[in-house]
Each structure stands twice: as structure tokens, then as C-alpha cells.
Length: 421
Image 1 (cartoon, one colour):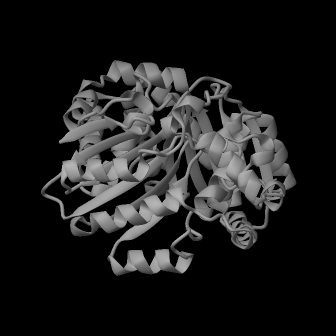
Image 2 (cartoon, rainbow, N blue to C red):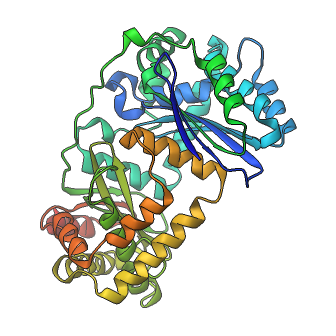
């Protein structure tokens, strides 16, 4: 059963009670991410996320780790380009302790100066880890290309120069500006007592912040860029990203775009997987995915292949894109795609963690709850003509962004730049 409660300070509590589960997941979602940072603050959102786990007024970082382990639960956080999330998942019987722990680290983090300096080194290592992972690195480079100078182009981990300069006052100002109660959603899914939960949330968070100091969003839609970025690096493979226009997370055509992505490269039966991996063995990893933001989105195709096969793989990718834009999908393929989407959706929502994620995203994107039945109806309502239309809108001539990373020769660099620029 779904319920929504708005606290007096503006914090939104959305819950879904599922008595058949033995677990419960609580998530605190802040509607701020890397796109909301100024250029000199690149990486602040992610740094704050780390610091909240480094000790509170009553718990050390070690205490936090031992306490959650003692409950047999999981506590973690993640930062995206638009949100920062802190969550805990435990057995339902441990909900009071879990809520006390999560609220303590969110509300009473010490942000100690020594811990800040220590965490700078941790973030440096995390940035180096991305540099050593070509699949992650090429996708960061690709986002920078396709988003141009828009704030969405910045890597979530931030810039080393900005992180090196962080101090405690910077973090406190950033939290005060962005962690406003009207930008916070608390999502809870699983087995719990509704009145007790609501009372506990009000006690823990009811006095947080000052709603009269609401700060307006300063977001604007991205204008997607085409072009080519090639980075030569001595790797075993060339890693490729091809980018095309998508839709915003709450767009009316989003289910048709989901279906289009599934047909193109979103599953093992997709056209790209079958043509490039299964039939020709040109790539081990080949897939497409959607990035949907509050005011825009992209479709990205990723492939890793040998340097000598790069042009062949790109030719095949472009061929499949053109076919979808010119011919759309046939009824049998569409029916199979819908069944795959519905099955994947239902399986993905079997845990309290995934239900919590959905609750929060629904609230942040639309301000309302979408039931599983509603989503199934939306999928069933997608037509081949709708997919044909969104394919033509997304797969536009000269609208492609290409990013390549790996052991490309100078000749290949010039050839790719000339062909796809």
C-alpha cells in the first residue's frame, strides 16, 4: 500500500508497505547532484556523500560499520548527476535501529577536518580507478562530448583541482544551500508498521532545515552536441561510445524509447548483440542504454573491439540505427520486446531496495506514484508506429556523437574524424 506524507518543513515521505517481505529499505534522496555544482565545486556532491559516513557526534566511522554489520544489514550511498542518495536495508525487526543510524549520519555528520583531508586521498584513488577502467573512462569522455559545456557534462567524481581545495566551511555552505527540506524525499519500502514509522520519521526529521529559505533550482535543459572525440591509449581494445538524442525521464514517449532501446541493444536478443557479437564475434561487450534526466536524455551505444575492427563495428552500428529509423520494428519483434520489458520490470521490483528506488524516483520525477499495473498498461500501449516515430526523432542524420578510446593509429584517427565529424 502506497502512502505519501509531507512534513511541516517540506520533507516528503513516500512509503509502500509490503507485508509479504521480511526486509525494509529506507532511502534519503536529495534532489541535487553533480549538475548542480558550480565549476569550482566539481565533485562536492560526491564528496559530501562520502563524508556523511565518516563519523557523527556519537558514532565513529568504525561504529557505523560495526552497527550495521551487527544488524546483518546494508548501508550505502550513491551520487548521480541529479541526486544524492543514502540508504539502509535491514530485516524488518531492525527498522528502529536502522532509522536511528541513517538519520544520525545524515543529520549529525561531524565533517571533521582530519577526515576531510583523508577522504581527499580516497577520492583521488577513486578517480584513478576510473582512469584505469576504459569502459568507465570512455563513457565519462562521451558524456563530456555529447553534453558540451552543460553542467551534465561534468564527471560525478569531480575535478581533482576542486577536490584538493575543499575545506570544512565549503562543505557546510554546500550542504546548507542544496540540502533543503523541500528537496529531500524519504522513501521506505518493505514490511513495517505505518503509524510507528511515520511518527519515527517526524521525530527524526521534522525539525530539519528551514522551509522559508527555499532555494530555486538553477537547472536548464542540455543542448546535445554531435562530433568526434578520440583518445589514443595503449589498451588491448578500442572502446567506443555512439550517442544519440533520447528523452527526459518523465517524457510521454519514454516507454516507446525504452522499447526502442531494448530492440537496438538493451538485451541479449537485441539487434546489435545478435549482429555484432553472436553472428560475427566482433565484440564481447556490446549494448545500448538510456540516460534520462529531468529535462533531457540520451541513447548511448557501447562496444569494445579490436582496433582493426573499429570501422566494421561502427558500420554495423550505423546500419542498425538506419534500419530502425527507416523501417521501425515488426509486430513479432515488438511483442517479444514488450514481454521482455514486462518480465524484467516485474522481476526488478521483487526486493524492498528496488521498490524504495522506484518510490523516490516517481516522486522526484512526477510528484506522484505509478503502480506496476500502470506501467504494464503503458508498455502494452506502445505501438510500432510510436517506436517508428521516436526512432526517426532520435536517429537523425549528422546528430551522432562518437567517442573512441584505445590503441588507434594516426590513420584511423584521421579516418574516423573525417567520416563522423
